Length: 405
Image 1 (spheres, rainbow, N blue to C red):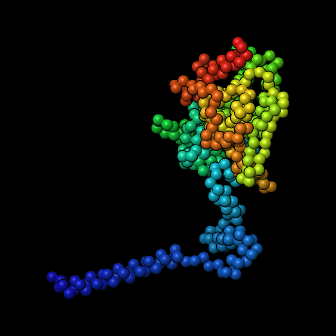
Image 2: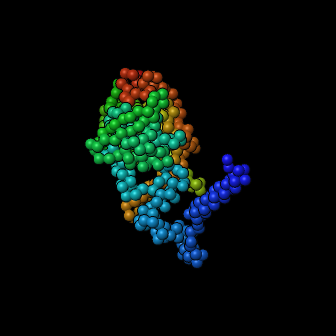
Image 3: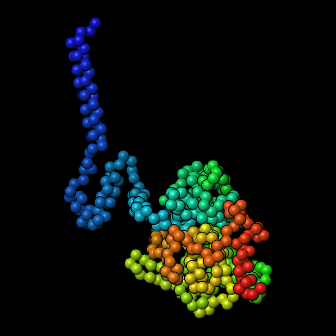
């Protein structure tokens, strides 16, 4: 048997060995993780004096460029710094865009791009959220719905705080396919494969309905929308319409200038909208005295956002017509887009907008004068047949009542 004394000595030796190993490993880790970046005070002061508060950024860039174990691309480092600055604002509508991203944005606002035809927004829950699929596009035909959560694109996780990256992944050459993973309330996650097309946005459609009532559907506001609206309204008026229904359901918005131009055609002399920046400076958009002289009803729903809410708010506050349907989406922020001379650009939230009566509807939406729901079984339908469309039927009834039919 091993004596008690030998056992004690052995235990002491083991403890000592363990302690030595622990200290050695500990020192090694501390050496790797605990070193300070060796930049002299003279170097730091030089960068600070030359570049003021930006000196630290440039100093760290130079240090990484000189000491990182691989060669680094200065352009990539600076672009990453710029993106980080925009992301630190924590506003999903304020983003820096590289050449491709900026070109894609310009293409979308001009009315043609390669993609699936779906408008998305950053949801407060962190998910990329569908505002609405655009009419007669692959997204609509695939069954995407307002409120759907896009969690993955081609198997890669996407996030609301990087909305433009998610949009970029969904776009692509016509004829190529993209796979979306969709979260929808009450169902398991859905996998949807969609073939991209060249999306040529026809944002305005019109017809004459029963009792000489004109009908105009505006699906979004791009660079061509106001001109198309004026042309089609003129054709309707040639047919002696006695009232007008404007359908803004699932219209996600678009260019403020186009919305203001359309409002000016419809409304008499009044404020259309005003914006206010952080310093309280206001810009007011007004319509002139010329407006339509027949009854007007606008149909809206939870997919009606941004510019379509501005139009609805102007009509409602001015008492120029009836807003009918369900509460709108609630986006009351205005963005500006700025190009840079290297073909990149950025957009940023510059102001809030207010309806003529001073309401900011961000996160709230516009409550219709006449609330009309679609039948429960049709609320999630991609298309609704005319004979089942309770909102359109009620709009026509309101017009008939106003014209005395």
